[in-house]
Image 1 (spheres, rainbow, N blue to C red):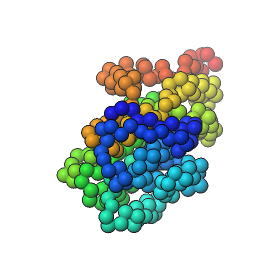
Image 2 (cartoon, rainbow, N blue to C red):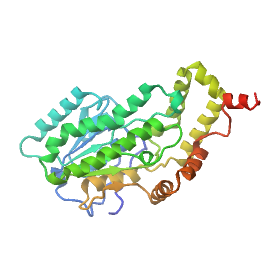
Image 3 (cartoon, one colour):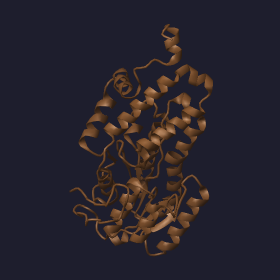
Image 4 (cartoon, rainbow, N blue to C red):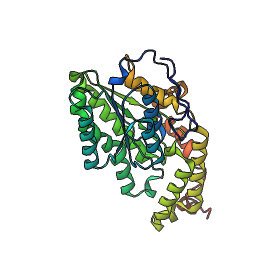
Length: 331
């Protein structure tokens, strides 16, 4: 499929100057293919909702806040914006009931795009268990909750689709990214099982597995403040073992990687999402861009020790933790 382009005034806004996308290779009758998307406040979800809306696809846009700038923009475009915290059963139930009532007896839900997600960065000892729980609740269990709630509607439509925004971080794990990688690895496993279970119902299941992009999720400023907050809350005994110099070196190296390696064109991901949702021949797994696919192929086929060397070079500073330096007589 030719690349589907949507042009916006800025990378953080949606719906301004949306170009007419190329529809070659897509299914027809888009006006009767309603799609439910989570995480539409910003980033991939917002851009996807605005682009599909411009193509004539009816959109149910789940947002964490109906008063957010992204939500207001999507309302102006004509999307049906729904307040939705995917970690809350009551929010999900209300959203599903709204969709049922809006569809009525004639229309069918074509697809669910599980896109909502969060990220936390910090080494294991700097992260409270609540940090891991929070990420898993949104990235994994939130997607499970929404999927289960909408499955009755999707199963009643042969040819319907369920798509998950996973990540290459679900295939390999950078130091300091354990909570996020755990959640995405689990999400990929859930999608793998669901894909097999839905075959008898003719419901297809797909994952989008991008690398880091310059969305709010990968904002250097957000990551910096989040890491600093975790370090500030870390027990003094643990902080003494690592030392302030080690923490600052880790943070600096990590932020350097974010700035250098995060891709900027989020349409690379949105194009793949549209293909998964609307192509006549969707793929099971999408890893946007050739270079990312090659990197994933390399890192997942080499030995574990070689993978460790490559990833540690990216994220483990060349500074000894305080307790190690002291044992070596350097402090």
